[in-house]
Image 1: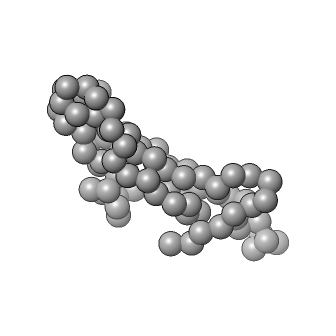
Image 2: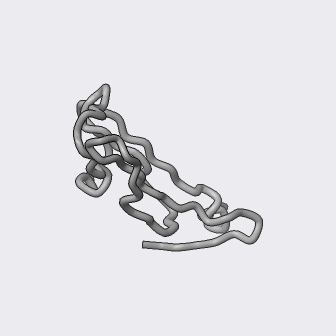
Image 3: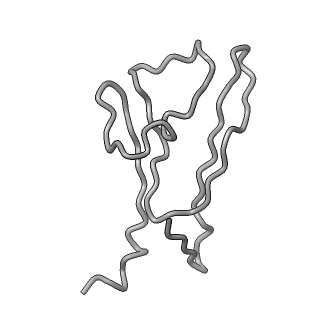
Length: 85
């Protein structure tokens, strides 16, 4: 994992908020900064909020797409700017 910081921007981080079966919001995970990160993943569409939350991003670390759902990824392109040309 590569970490970085830029003085003119706060570091990006991923905070996973889930829910209990009775609907109470809970913080599940806090992740540090990386050049590229998956921020959201669903196995189905629409996603089912009637079950206890699990973090599908952690369950699919090597998968680039979700065949029956959605995946959202961010990448800091400026991290590589000194390597471009």
